[in-house]
Image (cartoon, rainbow, N blue to C red; front, side, top):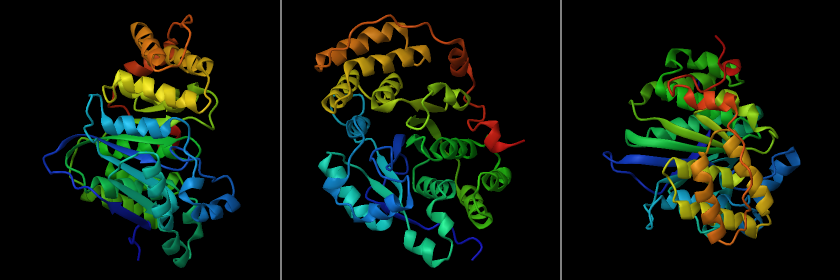
Length: 338
């Protein structure tokens, strides 16, 4: 069937009221929350056979997800939290059990249906991620209230920055739906999958769209590689930079920043390393000068002895990033074309 759609397997455990308004967190799993091995086919084949206790969470990310779920107040607001994974659907019980071990409550998971991919005789879909994730994101969006404002978490090892930029752009109309299939094919999505994704977008009612996307940097050593993606898609050096960004957005508490710092310290991340990440945040104009002492104080109150250090003046290139209109296309031109 030409428009059969990308094989996904979705489980939802919470239905939001149609009149509900607020943030919804959509988090990638592989290399964002869990240190899943995707570097080789051997690693991919090992994934379904690992037990929950064998799954290693990336330092600080479980705590960050719990803080986002909790929100900025003293009592949890149960911010809707959904997960997305390119791992096979058979892994759902193992990963959901791991989330339970890490104290993460959540509202649903979407996995790739490897079995249907292979039975259809299209094995390239196992490693192709843009088509899969856009299908999953648009399907999830179709079940959300119009007042939902999405926050996206991902990583830079594969295609999350491009996928999230494209998703935000097409929801907001910055990339016309009529041009979506062309852009997708330009980025390696098959013709049938591109046509199906375009249909999913056409069937959506207008809504609030994506507020921000945060990308955990692992492959990119230079955070300046994300200059073109800002201000909508932000590269972050681990959970500490992510939690500071979300604190500035009013989505977690200042104490939550301290708890994430403490979780990182417990996993061996040194105060000096956290200091370098703070330095980078200031250099990229992602934190104001008067906010630095606030963060240092709360981090110390949570047992992490970060020393005060001279902070740089913001890089003029990054100052310009935050002055850009939110209405500009988030996806860099190289991926969109003319």
